[in-house]
Amino acid sequence: MKEDRILKDFREVLSLTKRYLRQEKERGLREVAISPKSPEGQAYGAGKVQSPRSKETLEKLRREVEGCRKCPLWRERNNVVFGEGSPNAKLILVGEAPGRNEDLQGKPFVGAAGQLLTKILASIGLKREDVFIGNILKCRPPMNRNPKPEEIKACWGYLDRQLRIIRPKIILAMGTFAAQTLLKTDERIGRLRGEFHPFAKGVKLLATYHPAALLRNPGYKKAVWEDMKLLKKEYKKS
Ligand code: URA
Ligand code: SF4
Image 1 (cartoon, rainbow, N blue to C red):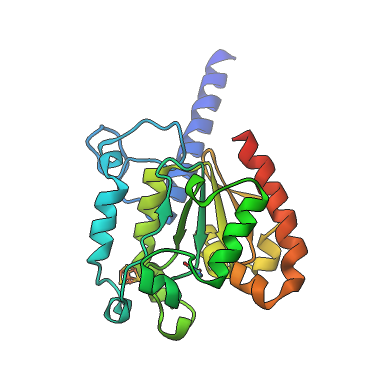
Image 2 (image 1 turned 30 degrees about the vertical axis):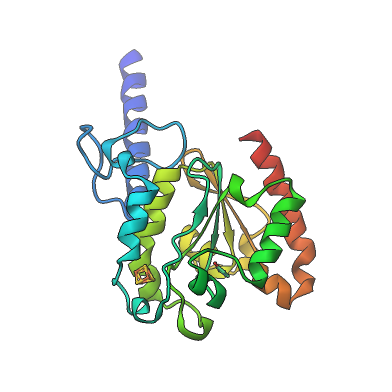
């Protein structure tokens, strides 16, 4: 009967909406735009209706992050490394945290790993300016130690807002910390890489080994090359 169909459709819409909201909540969303006034209404992904929060620009956010003291890493930094590249990038690259050179220059991926990254991008026909390059943490951990969970938690909101402003179609998570943080999993990078994961509506995520890991471990080359071929194909489609 027609009414049964309508009821069934309605239930389906409700359950999809619930699932979407639950996922968004897990990703840190606290408000939903039911009127255009809601500040957190900006969704991930291109082609979404712009809410006032989208007027937040990368430059405004950069100034805010430059004064951040939300975790103890601010004490030892020379510079915040906000990230750089195209504000309209279809592809955003996410690394772990600034190293020594990045901290000194205030720019992401400018040391040895960064030079390798620039070459990897060139191998699939991309320039650094075509994409946006950022990190999970915006300040350098002392002696390049691993990020602590509380530092990742304190800093996550900034990457989240960068993603909502840039609205890329594809995220490349480089290394364990980027992949595990963005996908909210403890799964190992070796198992996460090699395929696209749904991230949000219209946004896919590919994980691969970190270029610094590649420098230490040439055995990862083949896997990274496979990942780059996948990335190139998807980038052309998007
Ligand atoms: N490694 C990273 O993860 N990020 C940088 O910006 C540089 C090296
Ligand atoms: Fe703030 Fe992130 Fe730097 Fe910690 S790492 S001080 S949260 S910008």
